[in-house]
Length: 80
Image (cartoon, rainbow, N blue to C red; front, top):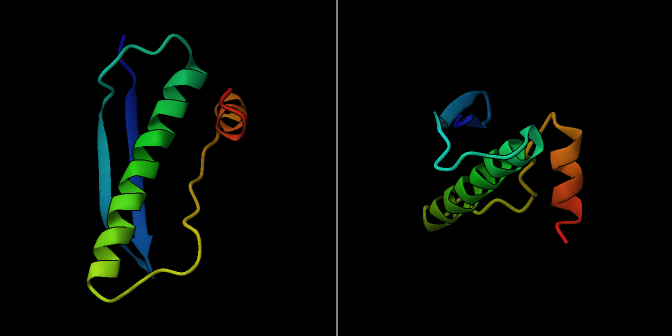
């Protein structure tokens, strides 16, 4: 069964980008599904940062991505 991924991005007190959709592939574990979702959020964050930079609003601080799956976090820290 395909997992559903979701993320939101806020700037200040407002949400300006969000998604909730079925993943394109069937993950073999919840850790893999969460890792795929975090990767999708990371790709969106990169795109949004570039858009903001094009608008003259370059973000100097890193973007924080929250993930509640310990295994997915461990994979992201050492994906080898």
